[in-house]
Image 1 (tube, rainbow, N blue to C red):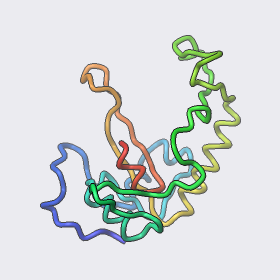
Image 2 (cartoon, rainbow, N blue to C red; image 1 turned 45 degrees about the vertical axis):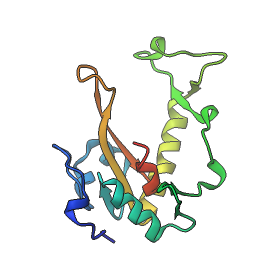
Image 3 (tube, rainbow, N blue to C red; image 1 turned 135 degrees about the vertical axis):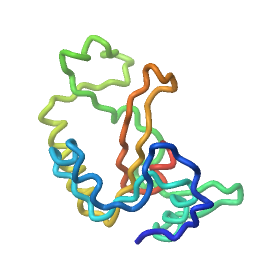
Image 4 (spheres, rainbow, N blue to C red; image 1 turned 60 degrees about the vertical axis):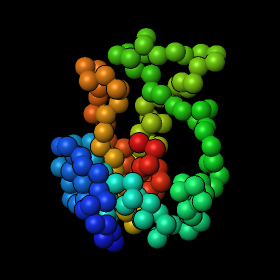
Length: 159
């Protein structure tokens, strides 16, 4: 269900396509390799669009008096740093902090692939996904392009 948000409410984004193109992920190498094929894709939506979708279609989502969006995250409320897993690989293993006190918990490649398969199945099952294309790192010389695929509109607000 595309949102009818006036263009005047959309912030200007240079070189970042926005909209409701359900097919753009088909050409993405990683999507093809993983089997990701969502029913509907909302890509690079503005904050007002994300708010509108969340308020209109998500149960238990409200706008509070300060203008913030309040969403129920159910059993995964708050941060869960002990849930972070990293696949050990020779190319990056020496660059990461491992061991006691580290937020990096090792995961073998087979477990990663099983978890990815489960996540892809879920994203293919739900009605729509929300995609954020952006960058990691503030420094132009060191920044990396990233694409985050979210199951809920409020997740995309954190990007």
